[in-house]
Image (cartoon, rainbow, N blue to C red; front, side, top):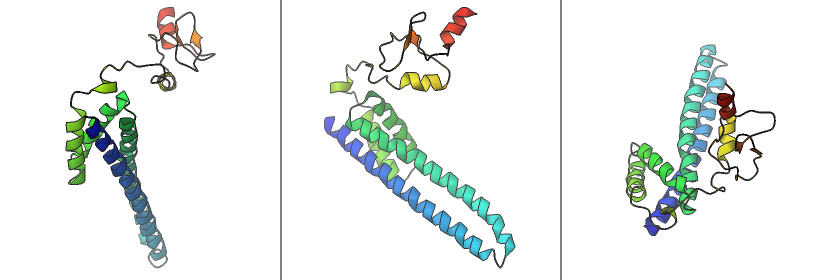
Length: 181
């Protein structure tokens, strides 16, 4: 199992890096095409109508490639560090990669086979620690939510003594609003 996790992690990092390189190549291609169309627009002004269309298509393709490549690299480094969230991310990315024939299909099948097996070692008895939850209150705060079940031991976040949940100065948690109403 340990060997398969390391192999899957390295493959995820390599495949994600390849996706980043390909997205940069696509950026160069689409910028070159729109530049050539701009040059051709001197003689044919109607050619300028194609520039925003090609730009939108290029933006979509590059964004899609980046949206799949960056999480794959993150999952690879998470798998190397045996992070508990990395298995779930690897499974999701493996399912998404199954439609990318032939390399994505092979990596997706291997990723599903390797990630869905019974974990052993550090993952087996893993309990979240304050270090693994460090960014959770910040993410929840950005959506206006709070952690009502925390004991306040997340480093770097002050604890509201009334409610027992992390809070920021001058901002009330959603738990407190529900209790006040």
